[in-house]
Every structure is written in C-alpha cells, then in structure tokens.
Amino acid sequence: MAFLVRDPFALLSLCWIIFLLLAALIGPELLGNNVEKMNLRARNTPPGSIGAGWMTILGTDTLGRSMLVRIIVATRNTIGIALTAAISAMVVGGFIGLCAGYIGRWPSKVIMQFSDVVQSFPSMLMAMIVLYILEPRAFNVVIVLAFTRLPVYIRVARAEVLEIRERLFVDAARVLGAAVFRSYTVTSPRW
Image (cartoon, rainbow, N blue to C red; front, side):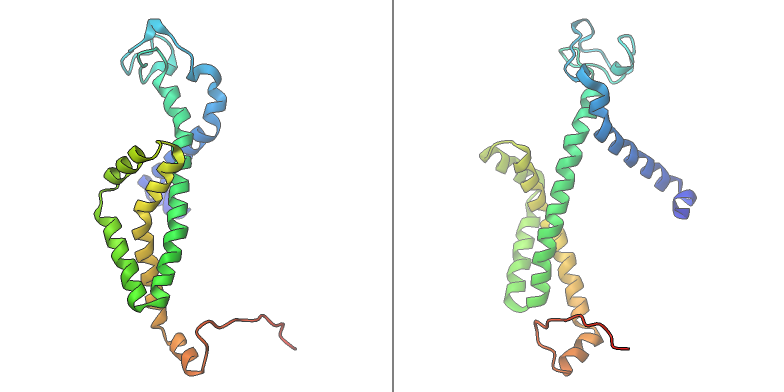
C-alpha cells in the first residue's frame, strides 16, 4: 500500500481499475431502461453537449441513445470476455508449458514450434478469419483471444520448469534415487 502512496500513476491506475469494475458490476442496474431509451430530438448530439442531460456528455447515436450509458453497459461484457480469455490462456498455456519443460526433447520442440507458429500470425487477423468462419459470438471471441495468447504462457511456464530442473535440490533427489513421478505422502511427525 505504501508503494501506491509514493507512486501517483500507480494510485491513479488502481482508482481507474476500481472505477471500471464498479461501472461493470453496478452500472447497468443503476441505469435501468436508459440503455434502450431513444430521444430522436437529440440524435447525433456531439460529445461535450449536455443540453439533453448529463447522460449525453459523450454524445448520442443516430437513434438518440446515450453513448455514455451504452459504454457503461458494454463494460461488463468486455471485462467478462477479457477475464475469461486471459484465465483460459493462462491455465491451458501454463499446463502445456509445464509439459514442454518437464518432458523435454522432441515434444518440447514440437510445442515450441507450435507456439512460434501461433505467435507469427497477427491476432486480429486470426480473430477476423475465425469469426468469419464461425459465428461472431462471445464464446468464439474468448476462444480466439485465448488461443492467440497461449504462446506467452507456454514460454513462461516452460522457462520456469527448465530453470527449476537445473537446481541442486532436483539433482540431489535424482542422486538419492527419486523416481520421475514420485508421490509424496503427508505423515504426521512423531514427537
């Protein structure tokens, strides 16, 4: 917490993230019907004009709906898709990276080549192609975003496993005759 007090940019970033999360969680309930509410007299209002109320500060669309309200409501979907994609990529990419680092040899090379191929494609181009072939649904967007972020987690997990494999306690366990897949049992100490 002391770091946040010393760094104003970090504090401002934390405040912004909290504001976005609050907007995503309670914003749509507070705004109610204002998302679909049309005001044809105030259509295409430019940003900055508050003639039709505070909700039109970001302007209105061609049907007179408030852009601010629509952005607040869309925040929930955006954060949900982003979190789901990031967590999915972390879990799947971490597991694949652990396998690549632990197994080693040719499976690791195949996994890393796959990672290079995925990373070589622009993620937006891949998203557009996949969403053109499939339906443009939120689930498909999550899959595409998670798939394009896999190489980052694969590389990090593999590097950590390779680094831990070279530590002295692993060599000591091998010298003592520990099996590759050793099972640990928890026993209570006898005093």
